[in-house]
Length: 415
Image 1: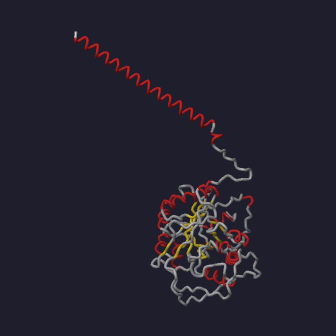
Image 2: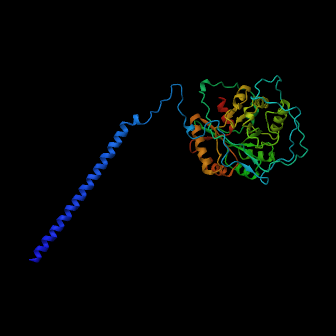
Image 3: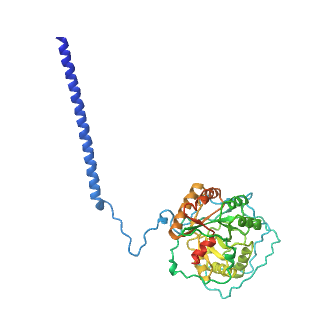
């Protein structure tokens, strides 16, 4: 009798275990269904009442332009910050021409009011060549290191002018000097153009040489108080690069050394012209100038008018580095009949390869948007590494790599 009873007990245990499993499954199903229903109700309620719970975005006014893509990636225009990795050259790295003499002003300094003078000069501009005595060696520089000026973070994209409305300059039988010195290249047809300009060349001989060995065509801007300028600029031309003179100009920060014989607004007109001539005669074979520093000087109409008059006489172009969003450089160039272009992107505010590659990507976007773009970098390790990787791929990515003269031709409606 014991065996049948034991079997019945085992069957009862199995039934009770099955019933408990079924109950547990039913409980899980009920919990899962309840969770789904609650989540669904919340999602539906949130979607239904979103306009009441959240403020509506106001549509842009009829006369208000939509926010451009590049403004989402940058600081507001006009904000100037110190670079995360500013350029600093120690005494052992710097090579300054020791024959340079700081020009002594012949007249009293100009007293500047709250605003720079905008009155037109009564003296008619005329070509002249200054013969400066460079025989006396100057005293050693006061600063033990040179710093690059704080570079703006903004990406500048000028409005695209339809080709039909552009006023093309009249063509003459003889080419202007800047076109004679321009690197002869044929841009790729129907490809957005990119010009890469490298500033501050000549002082740091080792990094300058590394930069010049990069594949061209690029545009190399040499500081006029560098040592051995003739040999360095000649080598740049042999490497297939175009030349600019990187003209030292007054920065906003008084603690930054702009170098000997830089242009500033306190100079009388005669002394200002002497400095302009001195700088422009330091080497030859260049197509024009762009400003080294100059966040203060490029907003001074008197300084820029004097410079543009001389560039016009010498048939040179001007590249505005736009170290200040209030620069009058392009406007004055246009008024004085000087061919010009403007910087779109600074490439190396952060001296790291990855950061420079990101800036090059932004430069590509500007080029696709407007048809051409100008990026400015410096002879820094991160920049050299990034360009060494990016330059060979530019054409395959659909861009035409050109010197600055081609951008100017495009900007003037000549190409």
